[in-house]
Length: 188
Length: 254
Image 1 (spheres, each protein chain N blue to C red):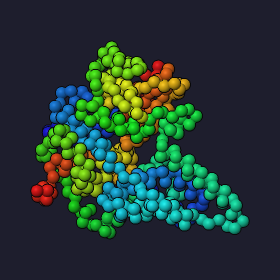
Image 2 (cartoon, rainbow over the protein chains, first blue to last red):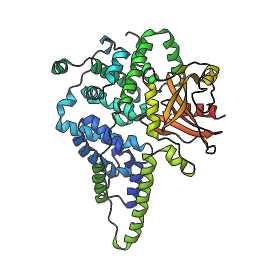
Image 3 (cartoon, rainbow over the protein chains, first blue to last red):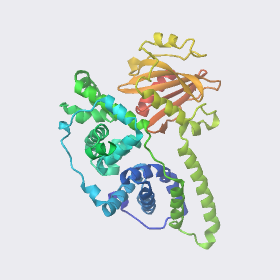
Image 4 (cartoon, helix red, strand yellow):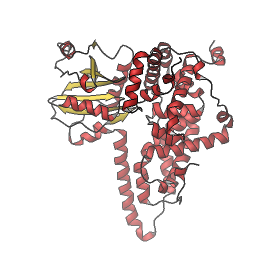
């Protein structure tokens, strides 16, 4: 578990701390749920995991000494999601390998615009990406996080956020414009 | 694609994460590199597709309730003599919660303009109009960098004359104008370019007194600034940094 979750972790907070939590952390519940939903690809599982993460954040709240509350919460949500995936869908976390991107054929903006107009297709393409690529895209494009926040949340060095996003975008573009074989067959 | 920039700096540029010199260096490179300008177009196309399809999902109300119940259980029950004090704290906490939620649910224009009339359109309408304008072919009805071409173009199309100024020397080039509908009424839109980003400035007449430039609102990754000046209501929307947006707002305000 990452550094920020350590520290004093007395289970019971008082009403004052509760009010502070409501004010600083709870407003980011939507962002927390959205990240879980895209990492776990299921609304139902995301509800359980978000609930668990929120309670965990509450317990560790004394260790939060100000700063970016959203990044602090999303880091806990992400850790909780990965723990859940390791336990329930370990295969998904293993299926990661990095291909040579320079060898990929380029995608035209026109074909991308057409494919991107289909919400279903976009959503499915995003779900085919390995979690580590999916999360940087969700954080950047859906939550509008800065590189610094992405680095905090995903525990990758800030210097590699840019290249992680570059790879993730290439993968998404490919998934959008060139559907995998089995999918093409299914659609026939 | 063989250019090294395509895989790295381009993304920092797209995300507004390069520093001023990095940005300038990449822009110089962009002028001579077809690979990179094409790649940038692809990335912008992907970004606008992601924004248009609004993939963000909100937490269900049932989950919110469950979490509150769990937080209650994890909050210390007060000792008996302190019940009254605790009750007051709870009341204070609930007020705080309501205040916090209203602050976040409907961010800046609504909450900051408490003492003044709110804008005659909602944040959702504003962002929808902005996103719609980013779709191919929708950005400008009159494309011109000349304020003397853009200003007369609005004549006869609206019952007011929006002030039109170019700020190319300050890094905000006027690239055109268009008509749009916001909150059920026709408005003028001035379109400015900041590096590779677009800024829509919605303008409509108002009878309300002048207001300063409000703190920014944020929704779906776009920021906006709202103000009123000399009988006109302005709202500038973009994905550029708040600092950039504020700079343009101040130029227009003067």
